[in-house]
Length: 157
Image 1 (tube, one colour):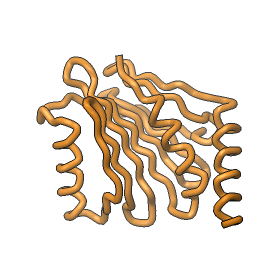
Image 2 (cartoon, one colour):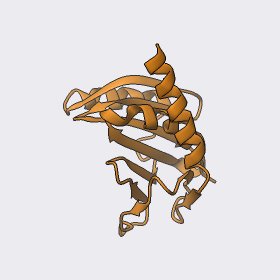
Image 3 (spheres, rainbow, N blue to C red):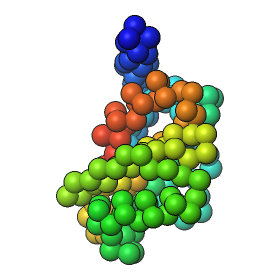
Image 4 (tube, rainbow, N blue to C red):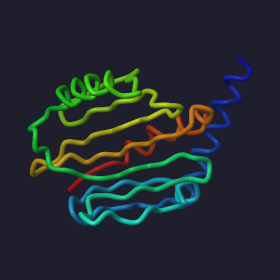
């Protein structure tokens, strides 16, 4: 019990401190926008040629991908979850949590030795705004606390 409380306490301290220096990324192609702790995700991958998003990395092995894409398959939040669960059976991926609302879907689980957390925001003009946070399972106490905070900042125009 004491160890669990200590982990929660440390995660909250990290979450509070992490947002002392926040970076807001906005994708010019789709208008996908997200805020995250710049001191944690301080390595930025080169932008892809199509300009649909960016990937940010941390020194401890975590990564945050942010992008937009057209909803070419006319998916709903529910069908997106169904598709992700179906795809997971053919990959080394296990979806352990899924939830959805009228215009969003959240998935999380395990892939290889990483935890993943995804949020999909169904926006205007048939665009889905996406954030995917992946981090080593050994760092769950830190990143579990940050996942929801970062995900709630995801938005589109």
